[in-house]
Length: 255
Image (cartoon, rainbow, N blue to C red; front, side, top):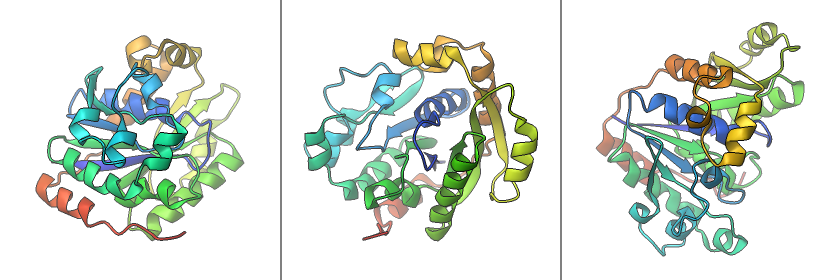
């Protein structure tokens, strides 16, 4: 089986990368999970996974300088494919090759999580949503964040990518999240998977270069991410068929 999820937000600052890694670790209790930093322009996953000194990254693979196997690392029960942070690496990377990367990884995993760029302003940024089977939309309970999340859903629908669910993140105690999520679900296709409270432990984890579920596994935010993973229904799919589909995915020439 294999299913590809793009974790997307439509804006920066929602905690998308933290959420991607946390969901991956929670899902790894039941599945073989691969996490890919598909944000080739503003990569952050390597810092969250303790891979800041990784010699080979997705940039090298997309520049055709290394096979994808050379850019995969075992960390915290996950297979992690980090992306580099240099402007030269971003310039030399060919986003079209992401199709082959996902197709190769799909042959040997159950779930692929694509940490997507926060803004849908380029062909490169939209590509993870095009390749995914479904998206998980990370939101803060604010009108601008929800508005941007709806744009993500619109793009996904355009490319026949379904919405797996919504993940509210950085929720403050003063915010009536139950009322917000109830209203939000009227406009989104997927259910609310969980509401993750704003957490100092999450900030500590980022500074320590460790995933939240490894740094503070019993904190409220970690518990909420495990709740989200339990709520996420994973579909069965044939790996060979999935690989063929990813390789033949039509990449938009323009937005």
